[in-house]
Length: 268
Image (cartoon, rainbow, N blue to C red; front, side, top):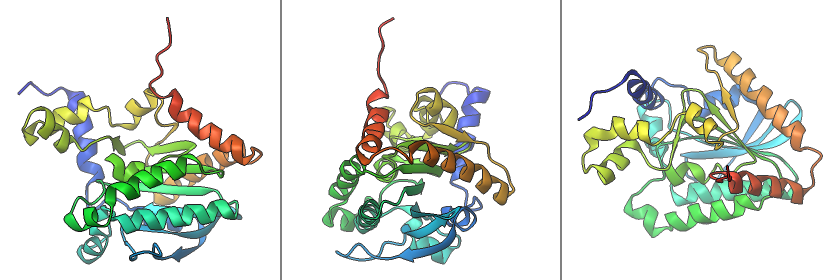
C-alpha cells in the first residue's frame, strides 16, 4: 500500500467528518433556512419513509417546497430514519412533492445527506431501482427551479435521485460520489482497506467537483449554524433571482444543458 500524502489524508478526513454522529443534519438547517415549515407525509402508495422528509415552507416570503434526507440525531431516530438510507417510498414521496410543487409553480429546494439508497431485499421488492430512475427522469423535466444543497454525504444514486437540479450548492466539507469509497475499493482492489485511496481517486470533494463543473457553488462552513444558514440562503436567493423570470421551458432547458455540458471535451 502506497505512502499517504497530506492531501490524501485531507480527503479521507472529510469522509470521516461527514459521517460523524455529531455533524449537523438537514433538519437543523431547515429550521434556520425556512419559515413555517409544514411537513407532508407518505407516497400515496406504500408508506412514509422517515429517511426522506419534505413539505411546504417560506424562504424570505417566497413559497417553496423543501425535500431533505435525514439520518436522525439519536439512536432511536437513526433507526427510524434507517440511518439516512431511503426506501423506494421515500423517493416516491419526494417525487409526489416535486410534482405538486410544479403544479403550483413553487421552486424546489432539496438537501442531500445520505450514504446511499437502502440496498435491502424489501427495498428491491418494492422497486428501489425503478423509484430512483423515475426521479431522475421526472426531475430532469420539471418546469420549476430545482436547487440542491449537498450538506453531508452525497452517496451514489441515492443522492442523485434528489439532485437533478438547475444549480448544485455544496458545503466545503461535504462529499458527492458515484459510489462509496469502500464500495469502490472492493470493486477495484477487492479490499476495503484501500478506501482512503479510492476516496482520493474518485474526486469527491467540493473543490474537485467544482473544478469538474459538476457543482456550481461551494459554501464555506462555520461552527455557527445561523451564519452557515445565512450563507446558504444568500446563494439560494441569488439562484432564484436568476431563474425567476424564465419560462418553464427555459428552466427545464437550463437544467438539461447543465448536465449535457458536464464532461464535454472541447477541441484545443
